[in-house]
Length: 67
Picture 1 (cartoon, rainbow, N blue to C red):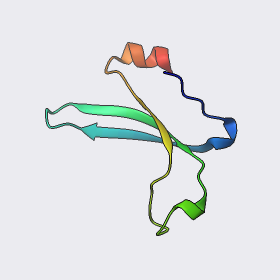
Picture 2: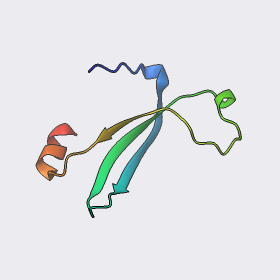
Picture 3: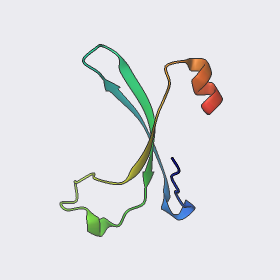
Picture 4: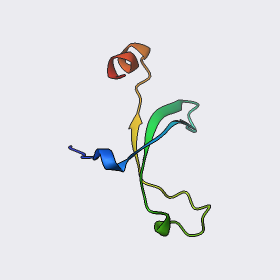
């Protein structure tokens, strides 16, 4: 799979995401928020922005290799 994200689309906003599952495991991700026009968001509190999310492996060693 190839995903192209151009520098003009990147913002400075990076979010750490943690999602607990019903099995007791908590999954972690890093989410890069992309630029989107204010015209797309109604009402203003709507946070339906585009983002690229990388779900991280559990292994600390593997996470460090990906960083």
